[in-house]
Amino acid sequence: MNTIPQSLTRTPKIDWNLSQNGMTWYYLYCANCGKDEGRVLKTSLPSDFAFALCTECSETYPLDGTYLEPDHGYWDTVINEQMETYGRMLTPEEQAEVLKEGTAPLAKLARDFPDFTKLKGI
Ligand SMILES: [Zn+2]
Image 1 (spheres, rainbow, N blue to C red):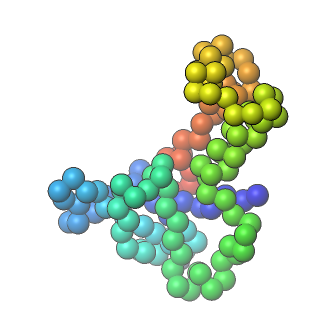
Image 2: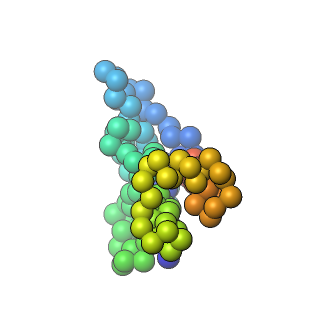
């Protein structure tokens, strides 16, 4: 399944004219053509991820149920790995043990945690 492309720049670009009182606003761009799509508040973002399309691209961009948010896809993989290997979700203490041991597939997944700042930016 395809992941949704990022609409923030690799290093999110801050709008210093809007950002004040502890709030940070990032520039948001059309994920398809790169057109300026306004600003998005940093505190409302999971993992500094945002997606936007301009009006023109929204008419042609294929979104019909075939896309996943990048971190959503990652967490599905983490959950599936625990269900396959252990038959259930591990407790936080058990997860810590697995990560400390470092050889289980779950530990590899943790090491591979996606760095969304390295996704193709605009
Ligand atoms: Zn566009």
